[in-house]
Every structure is written in structure tokens, then in C-alpha cells.
Length: 81
Length: 132
Image (cartoon, rainbow over all chains, first blue to last red; front, side, top):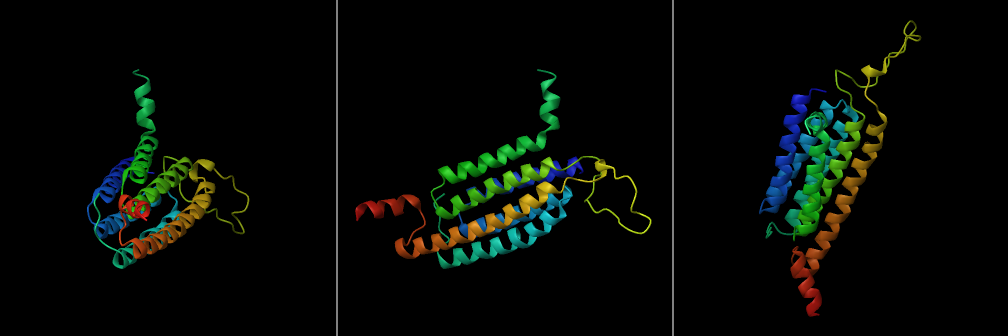
């Protein structure tokens, strides 16, 4: 594990998490959540957990984002917070 | 106090996981939109998964536990410092799949709630429930 890379990507993960819960648009929230999942996948590849990394890349960043975007298109993009 | 700071800095990843977990908890409690609450729940779950995988991780070039077996490689000593612990990975693989299926069911419920109440905001749903 390279701790400099780990710390940098972990900081980016926290920034994306704060952005995903504070953005005022649910479609933007979906895209930021996909970016969050992808950064999480990079974090697992750094920690030498490659099986978790490709599960997260396919299931977390792929299927979750598709579910999220489909739900936003079936409901509404509007959010107050 | 001065000997406490190296301990805190050496475990920086655990403190950042706690920050991530508190972001998720805040989103689950304080956000008004149902989808935002689901995002908070996913952030909370991934922080716990990160904590578990990080416990099995080792510094200093430890790789994935693939051990060579062959005709002349059967009886060598395995140095455990060269391999990460794979047990948390397998446990957390299950947790990722469970979290995605939980997210799918919750999103389906949110779609049904929207079809019935025409809103995803929690206070508007509660106001419509009370007015009936």
C-alpha cells in the first residue's frame, strides 16, 4: 500500500461524499455517487483487495448508478436539500 | 500529548473512515429527500467496508495471496508479511452485494412512494399523511 496515494484518494472520496449529499439536483447526485463508487474501487485496488475492487467497479459503480439514474428518470430531479 | 500525535497520524485512515461514516449518518438523519437518505446509507455502508478491508491490509508491498504450487514449489516457507489477509475481502464482498440489493429495493420503494404522493420530500409526505 502506497500511503500517499491512499491519503490523496481518501481525501477525494470524502470530497465526493460531501458533494453528493449537498448537491441540489438528484441527477448530479447520481453522477457524483458513481464517481464516489469508482474512487472507492481505486482505494480497494491500492489496498490489494482486487476481488473487492472489481466487484465494486461492476456492481457499485455500474449497477447502482444505473438504478439511481433510472429512479431519477421515473420520479423527479427536484430536491430541496 | 506529544506522544499521542504520532499514534493519531499513523492511523489516519481510521480517522478518515470515521469522518466518512459521520457524513453518511448526517445524511441519513438530517436530509429531507428520500434518495439523499439512501445515498447517506450507502456512504455509511462503504465506510464500514473500508474499515474492515483496511484491517487486513499491510504496509510495505504486501500483495494478493496467490501462492505458487508446482512440482518444485510445494515445500517452501511462506512469509506472511508478503500477503494481505484475504478473509476481510471475502466477508466484505458479500457486504457489497447486500448493500446494492438493499439500495435497489429502497429505490423501488421510493418510486412507489413517488407514484402515490407525487413527492420525495419526507415532510411533504408526512403532511399529506396527517391531512387524511
